[in-house]
Image (tube, rainbow over all chains, first blue to last red; front, side):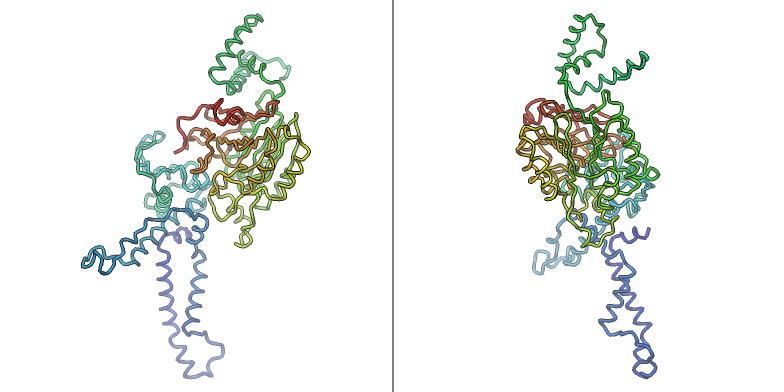
Length: 219
Length: 371
């Protein structure tokens, strides 16, 4: 499930943490080296690693990139599926000095916060798009993925749930239908309702039907 | 039919088969008309009328030299050990066409025999299609092509572009799934290329084309024919622009249509869309083919006005929305298209419906179209 972990949103935050930790670690380990170089240059038989600012940053970045081959996954999903409708525009929420929110403590959102909402939301949707199109991530045993019947999540109509699904004899939610599809045409184990993949799949399916009016119970 | 003596049960079942096969040609009113005429004819001829005779008489009264084609399409085979459902589906279609009596003049395969273009998938398909009693004519689809750029497919089935004549009709088969090279700049492996093209909604690929080379070939191939020559063209993708996002689309469709415009009776039959799909542009009728593997949803935009949608497939029934069918080419060159949906009544889209821009002989509409 390595790929699944990577597809959990907020990868960029994880990445930032990893880089930070690496920085701290390297600085700690290497702290004695520059000192010894200065004290006794004759000791240096090999070229010591260049630990000046940019070179250090480059080497750390290269190391991180080697450890995260999947780092461009969001761009890859976006490139294959550029028509996923964008999440809502919240730019009007950004606090403006001297605006009507002046003096309020509630609702003082910075542009960075609003951007974070978007990035986090998009990341979950993109993770869903990737799982939706990947038999491996879905765990299929018959080479079937969701997009084979539902290109761009067509004919999934998430806005019509909950509804009484006649063939199942009970009122179901979107995730129940996803699980039905997993068990039957996809021949994969069902997912727990809070499985990160299930949450991502739901996010993608809802995103794709943006603008569709909620009409629960519709057949 | 063979001359071996048959039990009354066998004859009954055969007549029953024929009845159901014949029914699709008749709407209710003409059925009643034919029935009463047949009953009268039976009384005059001293025959004992029984339940199945009207259809036989109706068939006998139809045009005598029809050219009949059965089709199977878009089977998307994996090797049997991985996925036997798609294998069972194409076997069902092969049974269907083998049961046709009389047998069709040929069976047309509409492309996408394999799912990922692998040699074992194509070989399995070739082996299954050997069971077809009538001669088989093959067309290539993108799922057959993009692993090895058609090498295995051509080894098994020959050139993807060809033409032939039968009973006064000229048939052309095109390879309409040629995409501009998107894989070299991206550094994709053959399997990555195949999977990209296999994703209907994957935008990393390019649009389908017939290409300048084939268009030139087509012009040359058709140059000897007069404009009243009945012409049937097969292409895997629809030879018009329906919905680019899913490659329900041929980028140079306008150029190909321009080559076909001088003919008075042209029909284009295409696979790829896995659904009942009808269109009429200029003088050209367009018909889709059903898939044996799964149905596609209707495109959210660009659906031709003349298309009468098939019923919304039931996801709980794995073969619903799938099927095979027949193509009737009448002596006058007009084509009726039969969609034989496995769990539904067959749908016939007659030439008269398309030629009259939907005014005449409209097939019955479904009560449950797509969302």
